[in-house]
Length: 147
Image (cartoon, rainbow, N blue to C red; front, side, top):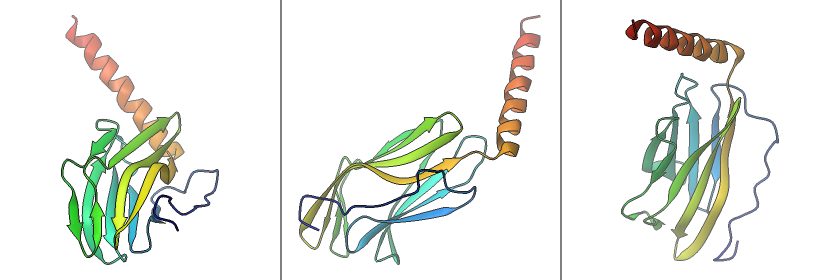
């Protein structure tokens, strides 16, 4: 990979099965692990690692917090996660994706990420039913509070 590009990643067009953990190699020594919990809030952990062993940064995204931005650079093991590195949870109906934007340096080489896909996830039928049920329950509570 040259200093200004991210390696080409191939991925399936269909969402990954529920509960699956997705590992994405971003630079030669830095990877991201995306773990969907499939709870009601689509809570999803993203952890950046040096050589898949040393955790560098961990962030939690959900429908309540769809964007997380690194406020200060993190430097360890020859990796620099640059200030402004941004993770975005992108909801699209029954599916959501996790995207990465920003700059990561690895052994002095800079890698620019723009909309790099870290995983795509679909809610299970059971989860969709649970969300619908909870939302209906919340509607009933709101109706009662107006009495």
